[in-house]
Length: 335
Ligand SMILES: Nc1ncnc2c1ncn2[C@@H]1O[C@H](COP(=O)(O)OP(=O)(O)OP(=O)(O)O)[C@@H](O)[C@H]1O
Image (cartoon, rainbow, N blue to C red):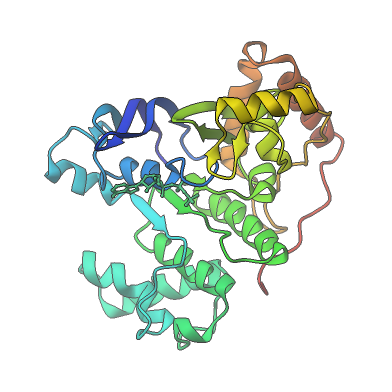
């Protein structure tokens, strides 16, 4: 099963530029979380800080008792092995076929025999729907296949935590939908803790158990998906609806004068009622997703602490599930 990641009071700057400050959150063990945020708000920097590749100036990131910020390089390096990373572009070696690309971490970091490596690589390729494509070069496959190959490679060392940096970048809506299903299926099969960084509202509204958003150097919110999806915060509402009018501007943030002019023209941003899409279920034939079961227990036990809109959305989802749940999802294997 995945392990919990606890972030406490994390502040990151490059020189005089503060990226974000005092970020605290917990990625619950075995659950899927998403971090949203406009471009340039430091989502990738956040992922790199979790694995100790960047060192924030303040705060702690606790992974199985190791502080990825303050502990020795030796401890951080050992703890990093618990992570699997899926990069934006798949980060494949162009001259190696998919089999060798996916086998690379096993050859590099373990002493496993080629027979054992073959078993693991073929199993992970099958898991992401790439069975039979071993000999293809990264340049010979689609962007969606490259993403899935990147995910297979992230899985070969049996990570307990998977970090995905914009897994949807460059994918069309159909392939993004297949990828969303794949992420849920991978979580079902591995029970890993997952954090996905994305701008994509489709992924954000259908995949995660928990969601957060970075904006203006702060973590706006982090918690059960329904909290963000029903939020009346103008930043969150604007982002979720892809609206031009609101606090988020082309250069990420509008200045006070622009905001004041907009407020006069459009009045304060009213959040319209939004139907929360049902969260994706594992594909047919897969067992129940244990992360979802644990999240449901945790959230129901703390329901009274959440905003009224989120409570209602959670209770509605519960009712829907107990009445038979949403229609079965489309299998992803051919994306
Ligand atoms: N190594 C670095 N040195 C200096 N500045 C950096 C470094 N890495 C990132 N930054 C700066 O940190 C800020 C946040 O970058 P980051 O890539 O994390 O944003 P992001 O939210 O992931 O953006 P996008 O969604 O567009 O990928 C940017 O202003 C970037 O220039």
